[in-house]
Image (cartoon, rainbow, N blue to C red; front, side):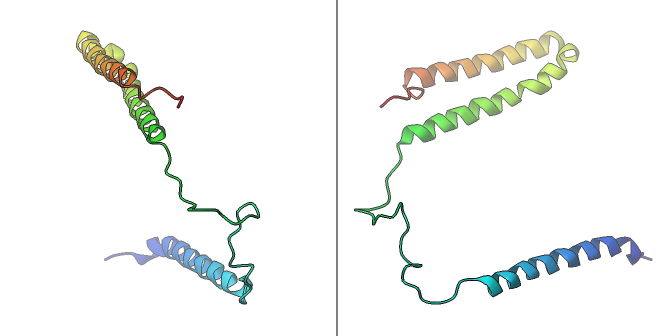
Length: 121
């Protein structure tokens, strides 16, 4: 038969969590701002009204640069397990990691030649 006393701590923790969330929501309801103040609904952007559309399309180079960084950063993470098991993997592991680094180097050269790593306008 299932012993429910083992789950008492979990149930207490769950009850405290639900009570905390309910308490925060109740406190938010009690202290929130009420009224129809027109200044409260206005746009606050350095004290000036916006001219034109507030949406400005960012340059796509920022995204490309960030993606290249993430790709090479994640690929660098794959080197750590190889370095830990370097002696156990032997020559086969060394050749495999050299091919892995070679593929990374080719990708780096392609990105460099395409101008993806240039930061100036």
